[in-house]
Image (cartoon, rainbow, N blue to C red; front, side, top):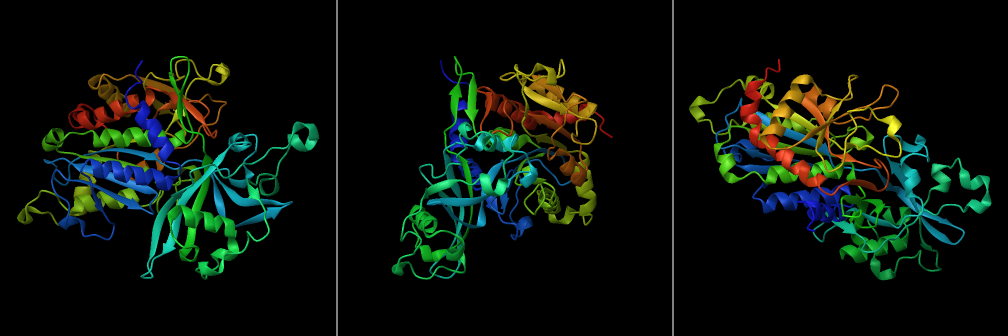
Length: 479
């Protein structure tokens, strides 16, 4: 039996997207293969943007915004937007990672999560014990001309493991555990002479050689093909090395790491790149996807959804007055921006909880999403969700037009709701917004489960939103 649409492509993507750097790199390749051109934030956009043009821009190499301008678009017209986050819970290598004890070489790490060091080991990171872990990320190297360049690194074999304590030791094996002393990956056995860099490796730029082991630096230099002496710094993280795979008696599931939220990111980007040139020729809207870093730690920093990234992209796009003759251009671009945002709509897409049959009591009847069924509208009345009745009606019309099915999730009153980028982007832009998700099991585990049809279900619905928003928005009064 052939796999559902996009299942194999999504598995391939997840295996490539081991870090947020690699995920954005994949997105750039995907966009360029479909005719999207790269913009830089310090470019003069009005001289570049054209009707029918397709563009993308990155920030910090960890966030990316891509948009296709309908050939009939005029500043003041609508934007159909999907926003998601592309980071995932992980363990980051510390700026000083040297750690040896009892003959073991270890790698000092710090948890990347909203809970930080206070988060319980009984929660998200309990699943990281006794896993084969890979190492990947971004390395900064000094080129021969003195410039500092970025290179991606991903080791081909697992290099780390966080060993649990055998139950035979009794109480110490049951915890509580200490982040700083009990949760350190082992990466090798310390060997005499391994801590010394060879004479021909030169002097390492800055204090890097004093902060990381010589073995780690030499391993990085081998992988990226540069001398140790050219390594300036790096941002590395650990990840579940096991490949994503289909699972189940009929391959109805996908078992994969990093589902939250590379799943919605994948489906949204594929939906955008699927838009045909003939559709864009007739479109009078801008179709935009924003994939943001740092959602798992609050969406702050310059590359997070709380930053000015999406706002400045939209303002510069409207300010360029694409397709307007010079004599007809308006000096009142803030007015045009207000017009555009008032007629625009944003889908905030983040994975949501599928029904877990082993814990039925934590779900509400009628609001317990199923795998391989449909995209889920997420509702919550206390500001963690942007969903409104008008937004639900719009998406119902999108589902009807695209022959898709919608589901609903609402947390119980005695449960705790997670956050999304929706409220913060909605607050910044002021346009109508709704929160949706693709369902998964084992959220925030090192490895989760989604339906094998769910990536394709997401692509179909998000593409339907882009293709039908222009005429459906006129059927609903949002203000």
